Amino acid sequence: MFRTALPILIFFMSLLPVTGQTNPEADKRDSFEVTLWDAASVRQEIEQKINAHDYGAALSSLLTAIEYFRQENEVNQMYYYRFVLARVYTYLGMLEKAASTYEICHIYFKQEKRDLDVVRTQHALGYLYKKIGNIDMAHYFLGQCAASKADKYNLFCKNEHELIESYVFINRLESATELKNVYHYAKGLPNIELLIKSLETLGDYYYLNKKYRQAESYYRDALEETEERRYLDYSRQFSFRLYECSNQLGNHKIASEYLIRFIQFSDTLNQIKNSEKLLKQISKYEQKEIQSEKIEFAKDKRLFELKSRRSNFTLYSLVFAIVAILLAGFFIVLFYQQKLETSVIIHKQSEQINDQKIKELENELQLQSMQAMINGQESERERIAKDLHDSLGGVLSTIKLRFDKMAHDFNFSDKDSAVILNNLIDTACDEVRYIANDLKPGSLEKLGLLEAIKDMLNRYKLDKGPEIVFQYYGFESGGQIAASIALNIYRIIQELVNNSIKHAGANEIFVQLHKIGDQLTISVEDDGKGFNENVVRKGMGLENIKNRVNYLRGELTIESSDYQGTAFIIHLPLR
Image 1 (tube, rainbow, N blue to C red):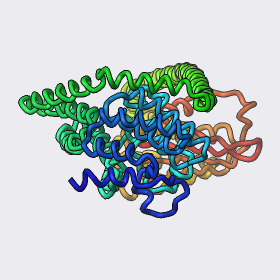
Image 2 (cartoon, rainbow, N blue to C red):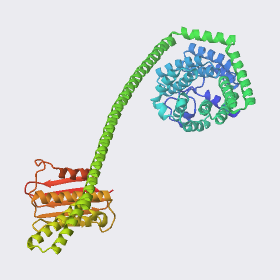
Image 3 (cartoon, one colour):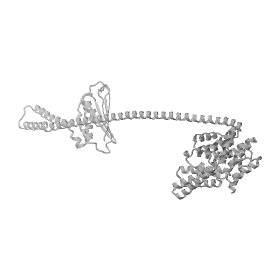
């Protein structure tokens, strides 16, 4: 009972406005705490009816009080009771009338430069217009008070602003932390409305997030507070929300009970709203409001200002919408432009990939062609070598045997000619053997690459020929070179040394093999007359070397100039 009576006693204690007060306790009271030193009977009548929570009867007394103070020209008292009237309208669910009354108060407080009261009225209007469903006006009044000093430095107003902002923008709220802070602040105040609204907003937040158990708990506390004070419209709303929560939780029996209470509260409100006596008094009050010239002038002036601001707000909203549409169109065009550019880039990349694949295919075909050519050459060399060895070699061997027998059986008169002829036959046999060996080096298969190269270079050494130096490194660790690669290496060195002997007129030929891991470097250098690669006619020998290097996926570098010698450097992968 004490908790119920305390806010009402404070509610009617002082005639002094609170604007500019520095006492911290002022944050915890309404900004309309005034005392009716005159018309004590009117004050007592209103207090008694509010104490009894008989807001229908209090509404009638408030209308009488407002008219009384209008006649007495007590403007401050008149607007105090208008503000109280707006609250009672809210308790009884007459939200449109409450908003209209608050707007009249708002005009007066702005005229009087009562900043704290202006902010409190703007909070009330933001809350009411959200309840009515006019979101634009709710945003407008909330935006009006955002820049106010009272809203920043007055603790009560700061908490009330956070609460109303959360209520208006409940769908954007990410957490209930600030709401709970306001709720705990409100629990320590005698101002019960801040507590009820914080309970309502917390309930709405949890209901929207489908946490029905938490929502039910806050709605139940709110209903207890409002039912005790007979805030009928609040009680009606919370009963229906508890009905919805109970249904969601599957408690259909409890839901039915809350639905019955909702109907009872609705019936009570309808009886009050439809009271013929009350309706006549409200109508009479509103007519007198219109007839009052002073109020009408101020109202028209300030309402015009409000409407202008609303029009500006609507205009700004329209401009914002147009800008948003233009931006959206710009981004859509930009998106499709980027998509088109991406398509072009992808198309170019596809073309490049296709070209690369074609080049790879051409290279593969070229390598296959080279392989076929080299295999054909080697097959032909093998056939010729075999024919020379088996056929011509056999014939020469037979000739030598018969000649030796004839020399033994017959006594030639010309011994010198017989010796020369015998030497020629030996030379012919050696030449056939050397040619056959060049065409198909048997030492390559029997002794390996290095020994085959040594054997080949020894056969090139002549009495009047160039000095041939052969060096090799990196073969100590072992590792066999594939037969097909070894054969091509042998042919490349054979062709290069043969060219140096035949064409370069060199005094020295330097052959070097350097193996590092899976890489082999071949270097063949001579001190001959050299050549200009761009001028000299390319023969089959050099083309053959290039084909074999390409087939082995190697690189060939030629360093030569007239009378400066020649160096062939070849890098080959061994795998």
